Image 1 (cartoon, rainbow, N blue to C red):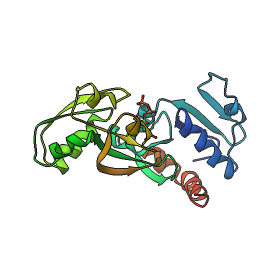
Image 2 (image 1 turned 90 degrees about the vertical axis):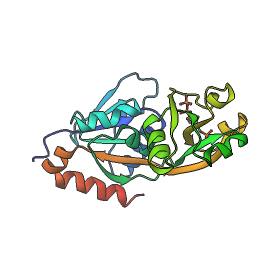
Image 3 (image 1 turned 60 degrees about the horizontal axis):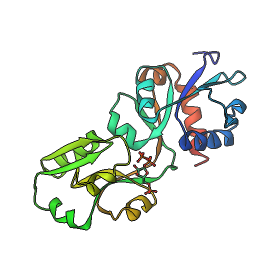
Length: 214
Ligand code: PRP
């Protein structure tokens, strides 16, 4: 396909989008408009390179990419696992590194040893379900929360949580610990399956250029 078509990127709003634009700048892809921190604009265009960027909520990025509203997305591996969309995961961008863990008070450690029925709070119910049901073969009651998940064990809503740990300070300041590690996480590039067939050269060139700067 000709290079006249816009290639559209969905980026997870916030720190991830900023880091992504820093990386893109290294391969000559810039978007001046996006640098205005006070702007509430959600979509940005680089006319010269025929690129569009839009800022979405992280969990929505795989949705935009699966449906082809964006050709390419950048989002955390946690979101890719949780959303389980039909997209190609093509590149580990190596930033946004953290771990998905089971966390709780030290006293909850033994509840993870004996296949007991326990309550697990998480922003990631699918990841929690997969880990406890398919990997640990432990039947658990999963409670979906939308943030500040560390509250779960403190207010006795749940025995443990499944959540992201980056520096560990949120856990430490709330008297909780990592009890089990589920998997490492980082930012990933995902691609719409049809876009990959339609524009393989343009997309593969981009992936190769980015890879050489990681
Ligand atoms: C994330 C995560 C932990 C915290 C981990 O929450 O859910 O709460 O960061 O980071 P740390 O190990 O460096 O302390 P986020 O800041 O996204 O807010 P939320 O709890 O409202 O989702």
